[in-house]
Image (cartoon, rainbow over all chains, first blue to last red; front, side, top):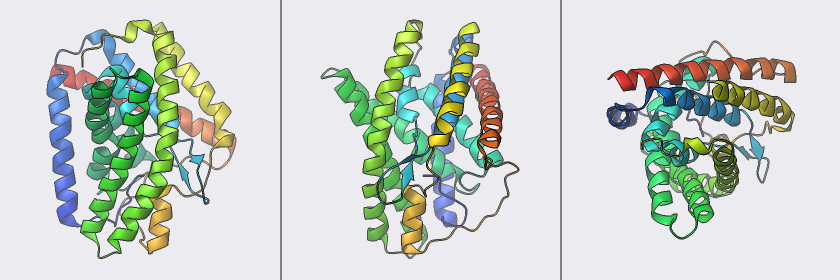
Length: 204
Length: 82
């Protein structure tokens, strides 16, 4: 879901950069008291998300998708750490590997990072009283569908395109890709909690 | 730190094992762009790519894993100092 260069208009580029910079600045302020010994853990998760995003899984109709991971990281390390992790992943992908455009990096960090870190995490905390697994799955799924919706809006506001068609296709594909996100999120969070019980208690 | 190193090794091994299973089909956004005739206009050429063969992809994956770890570590360190 990396938006390439040439798809966003100047106003959309400016607005998405501004929102993303504000989101990162907020997360940075909240992490002022991040314990020194937790820092490598953020790096480890960023490395893991980078690797996971290299592996697209097929869905229907010759289309594929990959893990976003922001909700996964937010559930394990908290939303502010997730913002930093996703920013690092997207910077490397965009600047070194050509995933997504340099003009779209604000939009891409917003769609694939901030949404999952804040909204995905918010939904998870609201629902985890019902069932931990349900809360994780639904939050992860919704973060993908919301990210796709936002990407459609950003592209729709930039171009005279059949907006409704773009929105419908994006939501259709990503509601299936989101199932993969939900499954991977539940599996990985459970595996991490089993292997690293001490991970609990990272300040949110 | 040993735990982190172990984690990085696990990530690298899992990546190497599952890479051959990765789909090269267009992703949801690319498929949508094709259907409505939207095209990208590159304004920046990234210096690296993900490689074609399994071996190349594993090497690029290891490089990406290392670089992402380093950048995230640096960002978190900066955030802590900010």
